[in-house]
Length: 276
Image 1 (cartoon, rainbow, N blue to C red):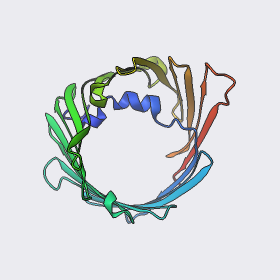
Image 2 (spheres, rainbow, N blue to C red):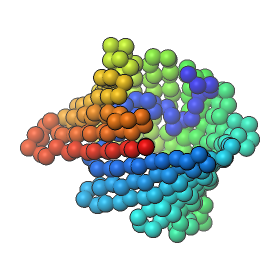
Image 3 (cartoon, one colour):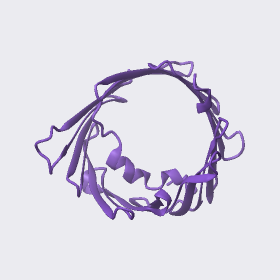
């Protein structure tokens, strides 16, 4: 386990990734390459809901600094600069999206053995201020996050939670949406799944009395093949298979359908990631 409590945004991340990561109903191709000079190039082409989009990006890393420039098909240029350990245990991230000059953002992360803190400020006339904090140890941590809108003088969100982590399991409880919802998640690694895991997540929205229970699992078929599946109490079933075609190159096929409305057409997604 890592040192310190980690960031609040990482509370329940392992369970969230098992239930959501790589599931998609879109088609996407990603090609990446790198040079000896330290420049990494990436190009993406995606079809989402019948609409095509793409981007080309370049990333350069030198010592503790990293620059990422991405050109999108909408003629937007997204530039991100991150510097690690410019102060002890501190990371700074600055980003801007052109030509939308008001979309810039400056973020600072501080990670300590017993605490972490993040602060982000939008670079416009009436910026939103995001901040989060966590205290504790790698095994148990408490944290909170909030977003303050300077234009209205109101909080757009505030969440709080607790995270429990062991070498073979993790659990979290998050009170979110200004106290209107609560989410419990639990993940456990299972040796019988050869490196896979099982996860359960239960959420409740108090204003609508809506409850959602989702269970999922991952199963390592062999060192190159991973299977995942999930199902919730509303009848939504999802599954995917991910196969490593060659080192660092993956083919992912996923599908989803409503078991309570079998007449509806299932949704399928395909993602191909190539790194020659």
